[in-house]
Image 1 (cartoon, rainbow, N blue to C red):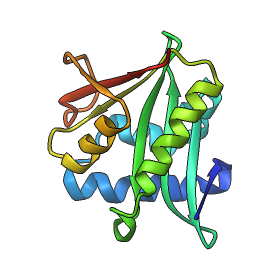
Image 2: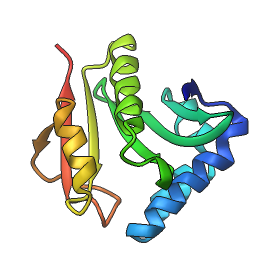
Image 3: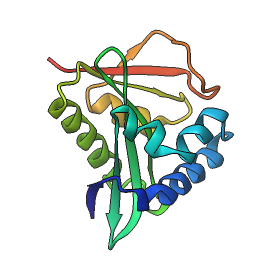
Length: 151
């Protein structure tokens, strides 16, 4: 398995991987549609990055870094194909985000998630993320807010 930078040819896989996990646990929201329908415009062109995990050339996971005004990046749209959950791929994708943030001189990584996603929360905490107070969010499902600071 390899992790590569997003190319326009990955847009459909980025959308379908995310739609699958969101619709399994939650409801696809307006902000999801906005980002997933235009990842180039909504993420890449705004100074962010997307990483795609490939297994034998097939996209099986993804994660986005969305540039924030404060010099950080929001970790967003991270998912792994259902059959590969628990394989360590999520950890590899998050490590790629941590490394990319450091390379870009980010001050922090920020994320919003749900308290219903225990495996994800455990991963984030194991990788140095700490809980923050609640914040304004466009996502009804988001009730946990976290950051990882760079020093």
